[in-house]
Image (tube, rainbow, N blue to C red; front, side, top):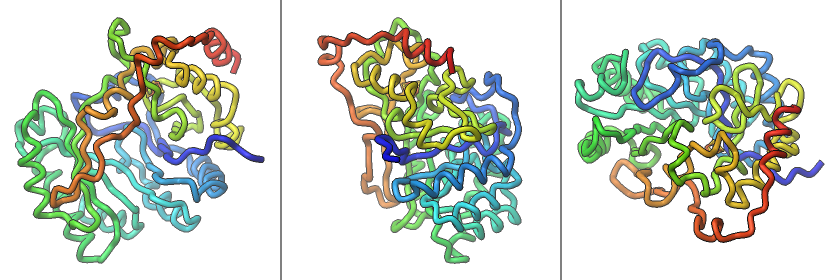
Length: 331
Ligand code: SF4
C-alpha cells in the first residue's frame, strides 16, 4: 500500500514521569498516569518502524519526561540498533546518571544525547531546574563526554540552553564553556526559546502558521495511544493506537488528513488544541533557535518553514472545523 505521509521524526514516550519540575515545563499538570511503556508495546513499534526506517531522520526515546527513569532504556536502544532504526537518541536533564549508568548507556550506543542544562550559574540553574542539583549534573555531563571519548563511541552530545527570563544573556558564556569540552566534528550546542505548551491566550493572533509537526512528526504515548502531537499532552485528540493499527495507517487516516487540510487552509486556529499553541511561531524564522557546532558555525536557525499569514487570512478558507471535532468524538 502506498502512503502519502510518512513520519521522519518519532517521539516515543518510553516513560511518563520526571524527577524535576522545571519552570518552563507543564508536566506537573499532566493528567495521564505515570509509568513505563510495556516492552511488548515497544517491540510492536520497532517492528512497524522497520517498514519505513529509510525515511526516519530522528527517533527520540522520550517525550517530555525523563528517559533515565526508564529501566529498559538501554535494551530499547539496543533493539532499535539491531533492527537498523536510524538516529536513536534522547533528551535528558542528566541528574539520574551515575558512573555505572553512564557506561551502560554509552555501551548501548545511542546516536545522540541532548543535555538540557540552561545555565552554568548554580543559583540560576536550580531556580529553573527545580529539584535538581547543579554540581551533580555538571559532574555527569563531564563524565559522559570523558567516557564517550575514552571508549571511542560515536554518540553525538548536544548541550542545550532554553532561554527564558532567568538566564537571559547567558548563552555566550554557555557556548564558550562547552566549545572547549565538546568534539567539533560531531557535537552541537543549541539555544531555544520557550513555547507555551498550548496554554496561550486564544485572543492572541497565533494560529495561522501551518505547524511543521503535522506532516512529519509522530508521537506515541506509553500505552500506544497516538495524540495529534506532543503538545496534546493529555491526549484530547486521539488519532489512533499502534496496538490496533500500523503507524502508517494512523498517519494517513481521515482525522490526520482533516487536521492537515485545516492547517493547509490557514485555519489552524479553528482547532481548539492548536488555537492556543504558539509552537510553530516559537520555532519559525526569527524566533530564538540556534544550532551551532562547538566552534560556533551555525547549523540551523529555522526549525519550521514560516507560513504566509496574510495570504492565509485573505484566502477563501472554507473549512468546516466541525468535521475534525466530530471525527475525534467518533474515534
Ligand atoms: S500547532 Fe501546536 S497543538 Fe497544533 S499540531 Fe502544532 S504543536 Fe500541536
